[in-house]
Image 1 (cartoon, rainbow, N blue to C red):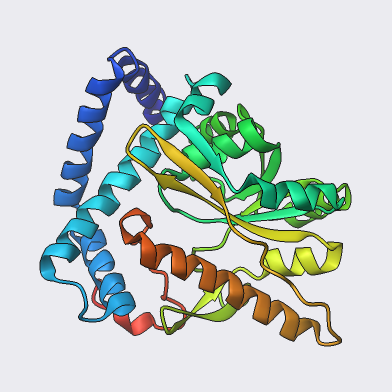
Image 2: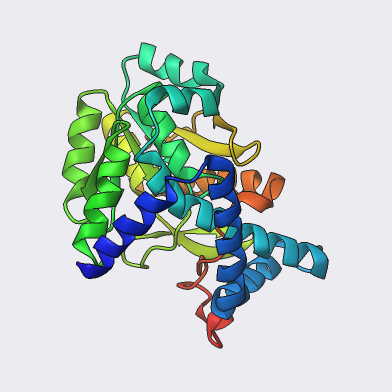
Length: 296
């Protein structure tokens, strides 16, 4: 509780500074995080080598590593920034592209499973979806500190993102899709072998959540990728991609496996085009390739 109140004091003081100065402070924090976290520098390097082989120079690896820390800090402090932003502020910062893809599905009277990931400023992305597009339901894993969990929950709820704890969330998601509403799910984190579907990601096996395909298949919903692209630290593009089709054959397992792989392919194409903006600092391949992280 003490740490939470200290956080509130520091965050409130921070918000007294003009935005340009806060940005300089955030950049300094990213440099500090880079210097202090050898573990995550190593994870980023391992992931980049696995994904791109020898095609990246040492200079480029260093650049991507620093960018990853920069993005992580910006997203962390964006939670604080979002407490002060209005819907009008979000509209000034974010441009929507390919909205017609979503509108078509809505006109068809279908529910929507929005799939996204830790790409760009994902906290602004979540706020923009709820504020500029439609309210949506998401899933979260509670933080160890319940006060911080509530703070995060409230920051996201301000813009129409209703969050449910992972345990038991599926019934809330199903209820929303039955009512032809939208849910939002992250697809880029490693999940347990028991809960995940093995996919090929950058030509290497890893586990990915199958729930978007499972929900879409069961409730005739559309799986639509949506990611936030950073123009700079103050301007962004929220871009919808074409629907990822989920077949409905006599073999449900096959349908879900193939649709989940298609989602992984969409994510990979996005990262290949803009590697600077993905969350490289987590152990994405830890379930299927645990040996690559054994010395970390």
